[in-house]
Amino acid sequence: MRKAIKIVTIGGGSSYTPELMEGFIKRYDEMPISEIWLVDIEEGKEKVEIIGKLAQRMWDATPYNVQVFTTLDRREALKGADFVTTQFRVGLLDARIKDERIPSLHGMLGQETNGAGGMFKAFRTIPVIREIVEDMKELCPVAWLINFTNPSGIITEAVIKHFGWKKCIGLCNVPVIAMMNEPKVIRKETSELNYQFAGLNHFHWHKVFDTEGNEVTGQLIDHINEKNGGTPANIFQAEFSLELLHSMNLLPCGYHRYYYAEREMLEHSIEEFKKGGTRAEQMKEVEASLFEIYKNPDLNKKPEEINKRGGAFYSDAACECISAIYNNKGIHMVVSTQNNGAIPCLNSDSIVEISCRISDKGAEPIAWGEMGSFEKGHLQIMKAMEECTINAALLGDYGMALQAFTINPLVQKGSEAKQVLDELLVVHEKYLPQFKEKIAELKKQGVASKDPVVIELMKNGH
Figure 1 (tube, one colour):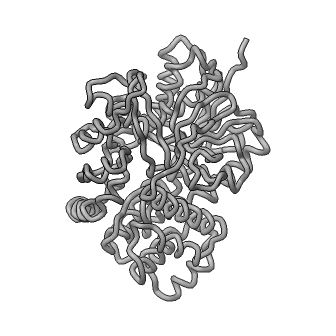
Figure 2 (figure 1 turned 45 degrees about the vertical axis):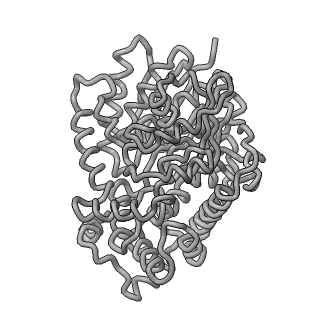
Figure 3 (figure 1 turned 45 degrees about the horizontal axis):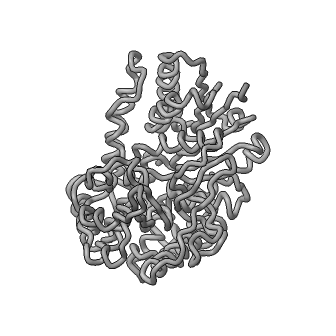
């Protein structure tokens, strides 16, 4: 008889958790789960309790005897866990609002995982994931950590390379969406195509072949600017240059629009900001309406409204990854893991997002081979930015943070970059203890945000 599984989800009060439950329910026959622990913090207490009740109703509507626990005590939950999933947001959506508004007010891209906002999300998250890993070393030393806390690649690199937790896999929904949607545009089923991905999280490329080995990448490039061509719902669909993509003969991910069509994406972002606020503010409204739906005592399944969130399908990918490890499936998935030579232009211990075989050994990357000069140059810049970001977060090193800002292609250089960095440090003081001395110095200099929305959030203790 196979051992029953204990699963712990850090950030259990997330609006995505019902999708996670649905994924586990679908796979119960291959994963005999006995208990699921949903962990959150004091500020998320109400949400995790709502989610916990819905999750239990979802399991009670099945023939399976699975108990859902909710707790604010992470250590209580982690004891003896087999799999730990992480899906938390330090500072909640209010922190994301600051990440998006402040750069936008300075004429820069305000985006959750790219540019200044993405680096600050990492600054806030890395110290917390370090504490989680330390708890796991003591309380569940053989557990797998499945991370889909963003920026997923950077967080996964911190866990594996800096905190020494090798049993960690990072996930993202962007490759999943591509593999779900692209086949339709050339009238194929997903099972009729084979994919190979390589790059970094939110900065990868892929190529596609039919089952006879004929490459169809070029056909898909021709359709990339069409609606539902594989771009996530939360990314504005500025047009790619088909000449550029055909010369590469690679399909970029949706996030490459921020780099290949930077001006168009920035103009759209600023225009949207002026019209109705940031994506984070919109998501706050969506999330509030979702939780009203979740409160319904008759609801016992994942509601369709969850698909309005840009991160749909993250959770199902997590369930499939856990099943592949538990059942030694050896299936293809695109995950963040250690490079181990699969992309020769990056260090072997760098974390890359790449096609892998997932088995009980974890993720084994499939070698991509040499990148072209164009892709190689971009990759090395982006990896350098990630490394500077991690080092700044670990050390509270202001100069290193400024290096990360300066090398990031989506941050304007010079005094404007420094001003955005300084303002973000001050408004996120509560979640950046490693920068305590620098923040005190900046406050003495009078650094503060002039944005009324941010000022109101600060007044309310956010």
